[in-house]
Length: 148
Length: 148
Length: 77
Ligand SMILES: Nc1ncnc2c1ncn2[C@@H]1O[C@H](COP(=O)(O)OP(=O)(O)O)[C@@H](O)[C@H]1O
Ligand SMILES: Nc1ncnc2c1ncn2[C@@H]1O[C@H](COP(=O)(O)OP(=O)(O)O)[C@@H](O)[C@H]1O
Ligand SMILES: [Mg+2]
Ligand SMILES: [Mg+2]
Image (cartoon, helix red, strand yellow):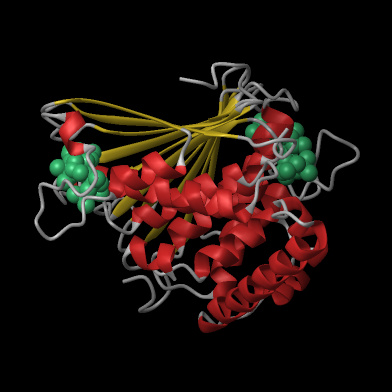
């Protein structure tokens, strides 16, 4: 994945798998991201991608069980932001299938979380092991002069 | 220290000892704290106390060196919030002296950081070891019905 | 310290969200104005400068007007 260059700043946030912590993760990552100049549009895209990944960890990874730990790490390089969202939950048996637009294991849900992450971020990498957990790594490139 | 009761929610944030991360810590803790209903005044007090403790870790603990790690952990119980700010920096040789109002090792500074933490929080506990680091633990009690 | 305490004192919780909503409104208006003037999307720092706000304040204001419910509402609002 891109962004292996020198790290300019980094943060890591861990929290319990409670729904109200989606907002916490979104605000923390947005505040960190806003340290460099990007457009509000780019900031919005990052917020949506983080919300989707963290919601997945809480809802699917830990099945709504509130005692799991979700970890969100962000690194800033010259090139952009690398955002990692990890859980130690149930894992995904077939990642390629899960990532297909409109696929969901829950009939009530839209199955668009991964599609949003894919379309709003420049790179997306999902690794998962059943009963071990899931790691979503996303890269958002800084465009043009902005963010340098 | 108070707040040994059942933990309702918890978060931990780690970041590099860069001055711009004081704002990140303040926003993250305020967002977490605001999950329960408190007054704007109480929220401001928490933000000031966190800013002072994190600034100390960056400015004094790591002497402005940007490669140190600062850790801010928050736990919410029925009783209130326990906020811990830790660094692995230079440590404080005489904690009682350092905590005296208007005491500072830097002639340019006001020496009121600990005084603010003391006055805005309900409990303050500072432990430190030279060349090992410093840990500041603060408790903010929920008043009356708020936060229950 | 008493001075600063008084300065900070404001026991309302409602006021927070109202002033944040006002800020969010200003942020969005300034974003449009700057976009017209510059012929491109403004950077967050340019909006912060135009409104004399910190980047954090802008992030907080935008979050305050975010729908807490479905993420899809926020995207298609
Ligand atoms: N962190 C995770 N842990 C376990 N399963 C997950 C995780 N993230 C996603 N999944 C699986 O992938 C599917 C698709 O995810 P997504 O595209 O976000 O749609 P939705 O959340 O609406 O179901 C989910 O229904 C779930 O089965
Ligand atoms: N995390 C820390 N690591 C090392 N020294 C510290 C730390 N926090 C505080 N100190 C010491 O305690 C003194 C008093 O801190 P404070 O009351 O915040 O005043 P100020 O920051 O204005 O000096 C500082 O000048 C410094 O010598
Ligand atoms: Mg989803
Ligand atoms: Mg200080």
